[in-house]
Figure 1 (cartoon, rainbow, N blue to C red):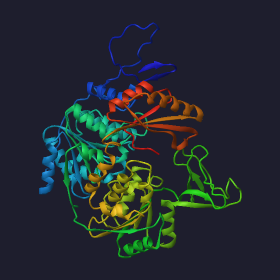
Figure 2: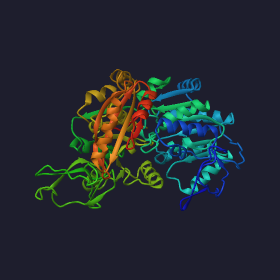
Figure 3: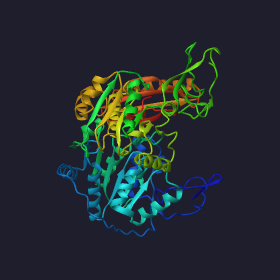
Figure 4: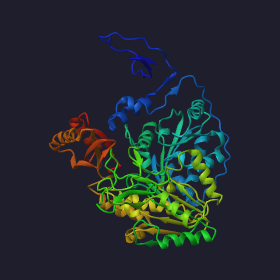
Length: 583
């Protein structure tokens, strides 16, 4: 702890001797019994360099070691995980490679293979790191791990209280935690005797940090495995094309329950149609359960004037606001601004505001009003804001106390729904039509992931609203064929064959942001090591009262991008290496 201006701050000592500075220095207030080891220091330097973050920002990701902890290692494991012949082949395969991809269908038994590997690590006196996207959203995995490994499992994620984090850290420090399961931040915990890293649902965008340092936890897990000489296993039913092309993979086919899914397509835009409503009624009348996916939260996404066509937008962001009818407000999902729902158009003062783009709350309201005998619940970030609420909702759903679950992408996050025989998917074309080179991959992956939540015990139907039936129907039962085709579209242009960097410029004065972008573009244009894919205003030009501009760069190698950016960047440039978000 060091004095800095009028407060005490935490500092990190990098060298025990330096040249005497020309200014007076103050005494250190307190020395802690904490240290970063050489691997953590080297790892943080890499993150700082690669992701264009300060060393302080990079190091702040890491949790230091405690020099006073007495490490013990003891875990009694009941070795009762029995793998099938196919699972055993997969297990043998992943043990033979430093980095491997377990490409397993939903319900094919990937988790059992991970757990068998954890058992083997414990026998060798080593610990395992198990990464999952948004761990606070997957309490069922915690139950499965603890049922087999007991108190040796420690969970780590942002929803833990300060006290819970301290308890978890103590068990990591003293060695009693042999399996550390968590979200992307668990990658930076002080784990001695690490023997294995597993990245489940490796395709999930939650692994990419949206603020500086903008690291990708999957990529950093692979870097960490290489540096620590630890095997890394990536797992997914819908792996990213990057992982599929870069690493050896084992294809684990078939679901554990052997259920059949029938796909039905309806050529329609996002709406509760007669076909949608009837399929849900029929399923619930048979005492079965249904899930309904809608990509948008709230009641509606936009309000548009029926007279002049004006869209009600946030005053601080160039986006339409979402309608929360129950709270009688419209809210911006980017900056959080909200205001009362206007009674008439604020532009022409004559027209009525009509809604566009269905939201989860509106769908829930529709079924509650028209089918009050059904128990319908909402499943999105507006309603499931805590780990406790999520646990309670999933328990109620699996106890059959809820008939219909209406939700956003949270529905696809690896939850195990026992009796769902109908999955309805709306708004998929909105994802397919995004200006994103991964739009096809994202839309198809989402369809397969949500469909995979149904038919765990018996035959299920999947109703998909889309004008692109030919594309989805071709690949919905053969994701590998899609990946093999998608390769040809990306070759020579996009990842995994090229490297991308997105450079962002934001300022309250739009002219300053534009000038900073133009200055950097001019400098980049004379360099032949990178291509400028495009530049100009961001798709959402203003967020939180700041005007935004961007440059998209492409190169054969990351080193070329880094050299070019270092040579040309200015003070307003915010660098996003390997971007996954372009909107």
